[in-house]
Length: 303
Image 1 (cartoon, one colour):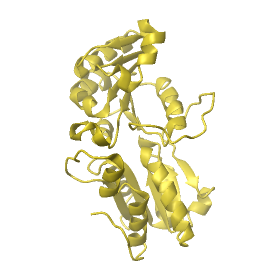
Image 2 (cartoon, one colour):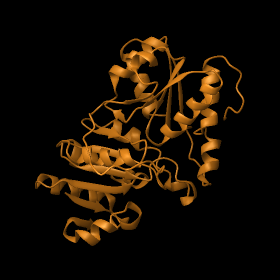
Image 3 (cartoon, rainbow, N blue to C red):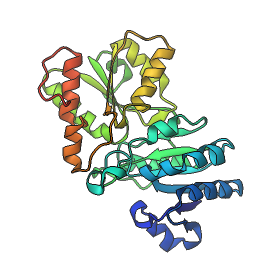
């Protein structure tokens, strides 16, 4: 395994790799397209390249990802740091298009962890899969969850039901929160606070945007007839779009689906907490969307 970046050694955390395994570290400078083509060459040579590049800058290499990696089904891991809103790094730094551009590529697997512990297992899984794999994760500190010493493979295309404990019980909830990546914690908080109001919702850590956990999503959609998807990404082409496509394929047109994500605009620079409130990625907004879906008066619905 080797690590590749494009002038983002410290930001991606590859400085530690550079210090401990200098022969496995490659920084190509500000040349993302070259980084990906280089990764393809190393993959052909039998190595396992992990290209650690900010989400917003991975966009520069979409052509190389498609033609130099995906067409040949080469095993390259795209570790997309700073996915989602990044706050005060600046408007151009928001990584809010990667689900869409990764999901459209044939053969690509696309995943995102709910916390720092799951990120470890996702990276481990990505390294031991075949073909191209995209892994997105946010900027900033983790949630402070308990970290384990071991690593384990995650089943491809399988989501995690967080609450209630069983799928049978989830089928009897009033609606389902399908949260992707960093939005899971806000979904869990919203569900807990809604329960105090007597509103009971299921919470799913989606894990995969491609392939989706079709079995779980379809089962819950048929049972509850209501879904709410949540992602820190533009709505167009994102995780929610993938869920809508799945429902359309199975002719489940009667399911009430609400998609929480970013609008069709470039998000401005600002403090992350403010931006999340402004663009509806907070637990307060999630609760209001649930209430609106259930025809209960809303309180702080974001515009």
